[in-house]
Length: 326
Image 1 (cartoon, rainbow, N blue to C red):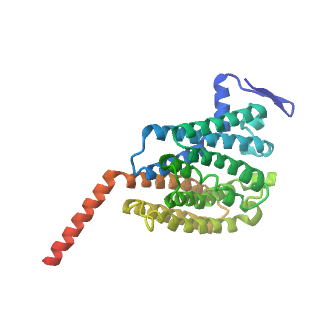
Image 2: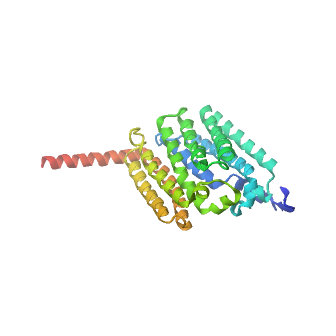
Image 3: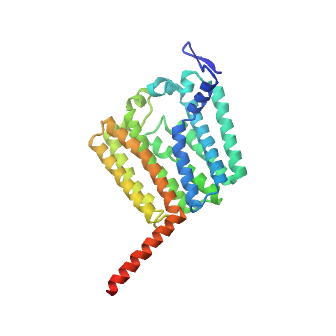
């Protein structure tokens, strides 16, 4: 069990279960879940709805390890500001429940495990992509951009957009244009998602001097940027339908409906940029949006979906032909 001291206050995990809980908390599991959904989406499309179950499990497990490693290093690097902010003060490192040394060892073991699993059960490309995700998140976002630029989320968001590339590469061994569109979808989704959160906790970021967009340029500018990125996101999602033709009409309908609601939420925030309830609504919907969009990809790629769409199309064509002859 860990037993460290911060500001003269001894903090410790009371039992083994709390040790496990502390290490799980260090990995930010809620963030990992979203990344795994996009990984699975990439695999599902690449395999045309017929993913090898073993490969799926191994890739998602490896993705969990890679994301957990990156998040752990992020917590290790940010433990000084985490101790100051109310919402993060009770995290394992600032609270003293896990020591920095143990956190670093944990992160290294996770990264090595991820690389090994992907190399052995998938391929070297997917393993290297997973490691690049860790590098971008730690070196580019956490170290370079987070404390120095209002564009930290925009550029650093590339780290969160790498998991679908990992999933695609694990299945195919290469990266097609469709894989890069999946990357672009997550890339354009990240600013609206995170800036809505940044509006909610603006005071915390201001307290520790992190130049998030709402802190530096204000909520009005941030809300407009959220709308711009949301509007740009919609045509990006439709690139999978045209010109790439890897998704069909079912996904197109889902993407348009979800995108429409996202724009509506963003517009509501522009009307009330200081309303934290509205910002929270945008943030929560952004999570639901990405989950449902990936579910739409999975549904559209199923063979049974293709059969149903083709049957409906044939019936409509027959109906039109019959009426034209009547």
